[in-house]
Image (cartoon, rainbow, N blue to C red; front, side, top):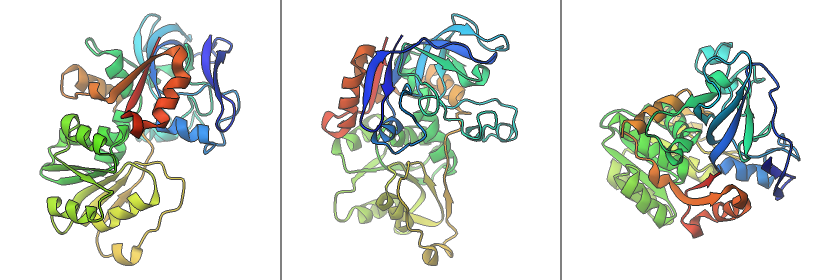
Length: 349
């Protein structure tokens, strides 16, 4: 088959590799019909993820058709249309039983396997471990373009941003970062009835998108010298009830300390590669809750059901479309997302 293969920092190639084979009775082989690119794939290409080795097929998001199942797979059969979860989970270990499936012990405490430690979804086919819980059936009426957003980003924005942030009715929510995951957090925050959702970013196009299609009531450009004052003029002088950080650099998370309301919550979603200062001398009396997390994907099926019911409008996330054999070009476009007004690259069979 053909696949996009990582060959060390800055190097990848669309090339021929062996077809995947069942390695365990709980595995499934899935034909990839639609896939996409995640920001974490760019981190791998930069060399930020040393455990991803030369020769690994990239990607952890996908929609496809089941081609083969192991003898112990009970929830899926050949021909089923499925979403491939970015997390592989058993459902029975200590961590899975308490909902912390990202730390599945069967997966060695790291459920992000696809495109990270084993071959992933940016290929014509993929082997998926623990298929019963790591594949989600597509409901009727949900398109591939919609369903691929349920592999990772919708649940990441919701579980790590909205749920960890304990977003509730009539609260003020500020999301710093209007990339795909930040937009997913804004969109799913609306499920809980906040009075305000403020999008913060340096890209005016993304801010307009946040207001037009992803549930933001207000938008503030963080390139403005007084942007924090603008945010407080919207949410109140005490700050926001919930701050969601979806960028992953020190300056954006540190801004949350100044913008969160006493008794509020800061939910970190961004992937950080550098230390961040934590001014405990100021925060210890503010009763602020700070959360971190890696998506567990326990809400993946719920996201599919909400899309099928018309309660989540996600089509606007898919801004660019490519055939599989143009994967390298798709990466070029995604790597210059601001210039190309790009959100999610959707790559089709």
